[in-house]
Image (cartoon, rainbow over all chains, first blue to last red; front, side, top):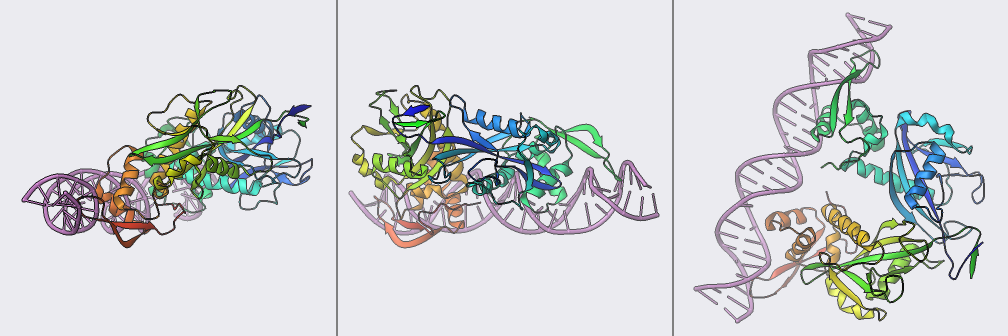
Length: 221
Length: 221
DNA sequence: GCAAAAGTGTTCTAGGTACACCCATGT
DNA sequence: ACATGGGTGTACCTAGAACACTTTTGC
């Protein structure tokens, strides 16, 4: 047991894990097996250990639920309404992560709780204020697409410009002009053309590009 | 005494209070009177009460230290390195506030601790990781000048375009072209010209403008 | 009449948008 | 040969940058 002179809130991290699957922007949710909100879907997350850095905690949760590491993770917002958890005062520091679609076979690494991907546009009822958290993450992600290279984080090391364009179109939910898109992306000088091409069906093979600074999200504009 | 099965961190809020004084961007700091860092300068802040919303806590700290309320306040970032406070684990949710320069006579409302304004470019040694917090706040403020009307929050209800331009110049630390600045600001349609003018010295009086949505920060661009 | 800040227009450039056809491949 | 997605160029428009003089006031 741990005692304090003044009451202390509990602190958790919750992570909005985004990926692109089946041409949709999806979020990872887990089914709660304990009260409160037993049986309800919720963001993966948990209590911050007393000697653990907050971001390290988010990374750990991400690793436990998806088996992935080395992916983009950024602090989002801290939610702390006094009544957001019925048990005790819980303040949650939220993060969002972007997982490349070729990494997500590893989802079995989850700790046996049912972890499932949901379309962002078709979410179930969520525990706590997790609907707010996801809404905030979506807003941030959409904004960040416009002034940075975050979109690269959804894709493997090498990708085609059409794949990149699809990422933008799916997240922003609008079609983009192919010529303008390609010119703009290349004009930033943040993509290097490789000599490789991929044959992907009954049509001309597409050139692969790779980020100049893989893993790093650069500002554009 | 309060006891928990698992150890809980303490949670504080710290507020970076910005104002423009003497043609400089300044931050409010208080001198610490208790360990750790006794005698050191620090951001105003304190522990979150167990039933208090986090933003309400930041507002309360702001009120206690400056006597001001109804000013712009926005969550900044949550800092929680395990060793950032030598006493116990403390996670701090930071905010930044913008105070109009005509409100800051009220600084005597402070709870007797020495609260003083410092130039952002000439800060003393700071307690904890408060230098990082201020650096983060400055970055956010500069970014936000570019795509929103935050700058209005430094000024009284009515102000001249020259005053507004000075706010931009002081924060961005660069001179701006008067004609381009005025055209751009007016083009957003977020400022209403009043019929009033201020005589301010041996020169032509300047027209006063007021925000279309006072208190609200709008996005531009 | 002079000092001092307020106020005002035009030109140029760069980046964004709109838009239609040929190319390389598999079947 | 045809279906499929890959790849390319030009004209237009708008927003931002550069730049200098007249106006109104106080002394």
